[in-house]
Length: 193
Image 1: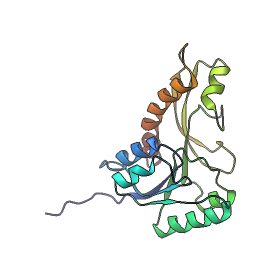
Image 2: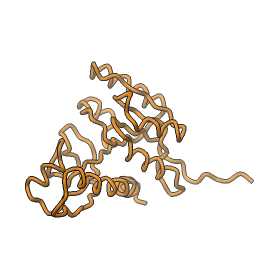
Image 3: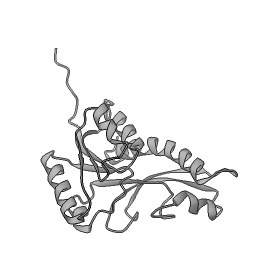
Image 4: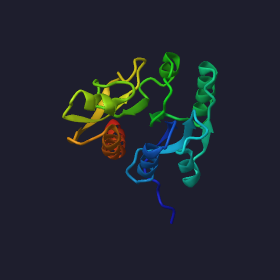
């Protein structure tokens, strides 16, 4: 007897620049029966990104895109996404800022995870900034991507208590653990699951 694969999953691409730990948790999530997504493509601007190994492990095709020329790079990415019929993009530590025209192409279909409680601490060095300002809490945010940096509509957030002896490194570790849980939750929320 042929098993039904249930409702069709939405084709998803994950964009990375580094270690890919969020990519790994998204892949594991996508393999679950109740996950609404199926990851069909990994995009990276960095040929040395450690996260590319997860593509090999889980047999997901990847494309490394040279970003010397942003508009050419984005044209190549759009071609790859359309080619694979990608419906949703998850940015997971992707260190390039997407252009307005790219975002328009995928309006409302690009998610990002950011290591702070937005709207606080957009951009980089979020942990250092939170500690320097004596914040009691930091955390992570999954949000839609719009043309302003880390300013799109928030889908979900998770607070993380900043300990007295936390350093940017120890805080980053604590928050990353929560990121791995929050991203799948945010995707489920998006699909009303």
